Image: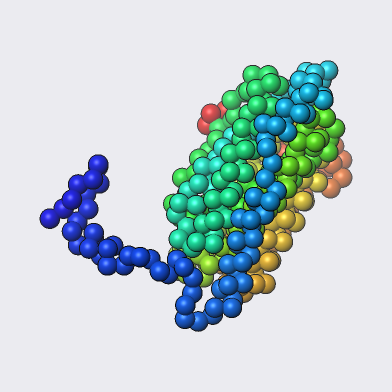
Length: 337
């Protein structure tokens, strides 16, 4: 016999099984062994939740106050700089919307109460970031459509089939890139509003990384070899999309006074530090499911994409190959749009 609820069909057996395991006392915490260790981890994740409340800020009020002091975004800004800023911020804006959706998924799907609290707190941060960025971008001018490569990346993480892949995509990739880009745009001096506004974003994003550091290892510990491989492959594929998409923004970064190599190094350092923190706390088995950007061919790729002495001083063959890849990335970006 089955019960029908909306479009779902629930068998009597499954309903009885769920009823038999209710209440889910395991959500209240460990009761047998490892209590001290588990309590320590729980307190760290709960601290993220409480820090979010402690450092919460009123997005509309902060933005309105900055508008009153500095005027409209883009006033007296060079048109080319304004267009570059609009393109970069529009991608970040949609990234915040994706992060809002993903953190909501995590809050709903994560069974551990402490991690669920931290993810729930992040939902409100990401929502605030999206709305404030949207208000800024729309005042700056018509928001351009983003290219096919960043769209493909955002959709890939949004549609990730496992919690681990969502955490890798958002916490290890999205958040680290967002922290660095918010910092560099704020420091660039391109807009006094952003100079004061983006440190709020950066502080929130830096805190968000903690959820992945503390919860992802729990998931990796329970993975089979195949699941670990799929998670590492997912990270690699997302990284390649990020890297390829970056080629299409080089000119925008230069117009905004943002050094792409410096940003790549800071993102790489942040991601490597996160991976090392997880490995130090949980053992090297973590490395079977997550990759460090400083391992393997990572440093060679960075030096090719962002030559230490600048592309203008690179050998002619290097410049030609780089230009070919850039043109191919732009063509792919348009084709996927």
